[in-house]
Image (cartoon, rainbow, N blue to C red; front, side, top):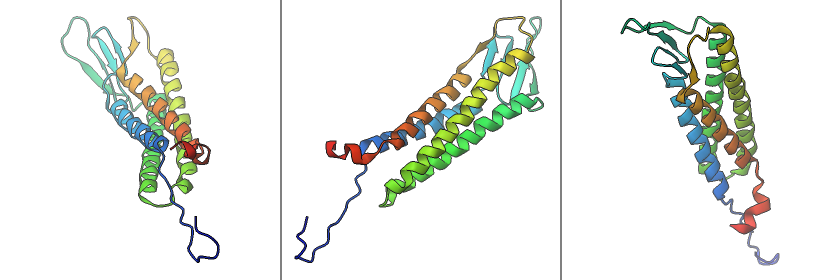
Length: 181
């Protein structure tokens, strides 16, 4: 620090903390997992006779080797699930871009709270879609064979968890721990 009489100004340096970088990595991983979940052909599967994704439902009768597929976008609950999941993914994308831009701009702290709020909003949307999906699936599909929620559904939960982790990391106040770095 300079003395008051020397005429030199005190320069504040905004330090990028490792927790914010980890938060940005969490957001990026959430984006990748969301992309994988949306494009996944396997949200629900059943003994090589049935699979359901966000886009189509396919059945294979036991006596035939041909799959019969139809669009799932005719069902209200599947459209709602897709809209909530895509809405959450869009918010995560915006939060990632804001977080990335905040690294390049000198005043990073100004962007921490908006990124955290966007991520919490995305988590709420995605949790709603991930709770709605199995409830409505069990209500509407006749379960004559064993069905299991597969890796596409798991990827969506992974994206939600990483988004929540990123939101928590962006909520941490850097003033409380900047002495440690």
